[in-house]
Image (spheres, one colour):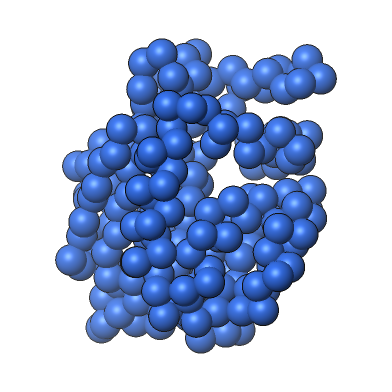
Length: 218
């Protein structure tokens, strides 16, 4: 099962997860994106999907009203809990991104960082419907993810019949995984979220993109 394969990869990668953010050429983008997220999520009650180790949560959470940071993987959540333990307005929970009905809180903002790229193209709209259902009508939704940058990004190993792209990832212990990693264009993002999103924005940095919009009030 593809989801379990990805979960196994991230469980084994948990202690190496943040190494990608230490690449020297990405430091300026990280500062810019952290500042942009802090602005977009300020004074919001946030549901975060795929929080991983809480790397991005640590930047925006101090300015948010409260944050429920979720991930499917217990191994990365243990790191996130340690990293975010000093923030009283953050709750770290295990949750399936496709089954969010049990969270029971009042969110006016949703954030998913570096998650869109791991969704099969056919599952993007079902995920968006589930994500939006956990938020108030008229909520702000933000996605951030990687741009493909020749010489910095891991080389794409193959493309399947549905247009999904994959990369080989090697862990410190020598194990190798072929991981789904899509790089959507601005038009693909706008088309996907336009079904139920309004006031859509898309911003490119050198290595990352950020897309945000408001959900329908109807």
